[in-house]
Image (cartoon, rainbow, N blue to C red; front, side):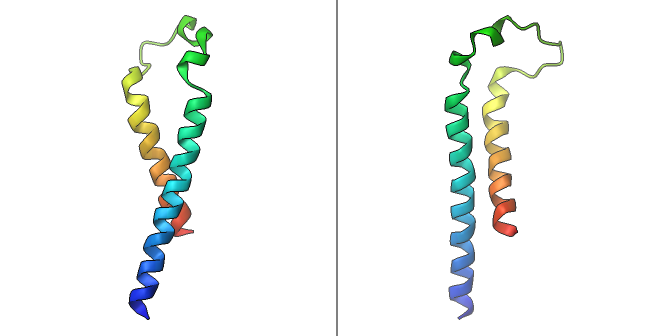
Length: 72
């Protein structure tokens, strides 16, 4: 019985992570930089992080949201 419960818990985490990552992918596609021509013209501060960091950081954030959802 305990083995079945652990397997159920693993599937719960997998589902919640996939769910949150899917939301992130969909929102990223809808708000992609190619749709925001005005964003390139905005004067950004000197401490603005480079563009290549946004993808990995948001992926990690959505992963952590999925883990948190699985815990609660």
